[in-house]
Image (cartoon, rainbow, N blue to C red; front, side):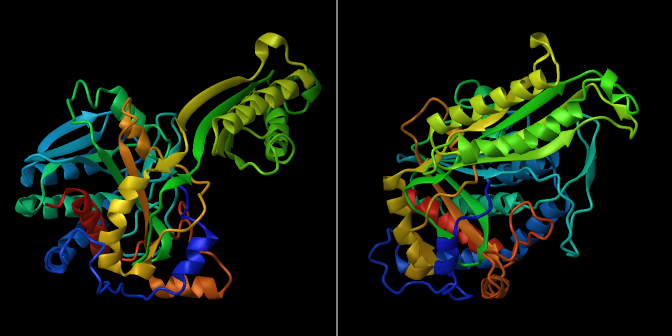
Length: 453
């Protein structure tokens, strides 16, 4: 996902209190104050258990499509709570289903995967995990985007809903999704027959929460486009390898890759209309092994962000054109042009106005009106949660950002002229432990806002 939202959101949140203050006016909420109090007190009593689950998942992170341990925890918790459990969907995905009389079907999604980032928080439950990827590379692994919190919140919400079945009606579908980071997990679950082979009920509403490095107690929720679309693109430059002392006898793909990295940046500056949004990032260049050997190939891993299909196509076409032009300049024949592989893809995420409107009242009742932020521009980060709709375009999506930064650290960052104390995918990303029960309350109140009797 993108690191959090925007400067507008940050500035609004700067005035928020460290401890969320429930609103005294419940008129806009479908939940009575008595019921809301009962739910929040129930979660508070479960807070220690949830924190232990969070620390355990944090200390044992897993990369996309490798989340076997996390998936097993989720399945075990769902089974103990009486949910119908389906496992192994899209490799490691898990679904828990509870049918409870007539009513809407609500799908609540939490992503499970971690990042290939080495943690530097110094926490006593910090990750020290390293794994070998399928390509043979050994990498560190850590939850530096908050997916450990997402899973914990989901498990807490599942418990609340199972224990309060008399207070809601409908069908609840929890989804523990793999591989959000490469933007391939949601599509993998759908392609694996989420709604056909595995007979998961098609939802009326799809909810998802994501951590944001702003103060605990704050939620960003609004309708319309909130996150950019994205593509992961691998460009492999082919060359002729040889001895580093005789470059004239080679066709150096490393030089081709180096030029590509810089020329790709001109796509935004000189190809896209100035008023359109686009981002081109090269996250990795992989080539060769020895100092004195010119390799025969160089891999450039590219990520793009956009808000419209037209801008997406312009960026893709430009990447291909630039890559082919560089290869031609360095003497590669037409049959040795760069190989372009399109990997994970997700269009812009658009929240449904009706779904968000139904959630705002309950959230304001829980957190206080000023702590539910509804006005902020779209972020250039991306998601794939909405791809869980599959071929069901009428599913109403509500995706919200939940603050998880210790409030004093957030305020200090603002005072220092920084938007956030840390960003997502940063080695120092820290989820405030107070955000574990609070995020669970936000999730539970959101679900109940759609299903409460």
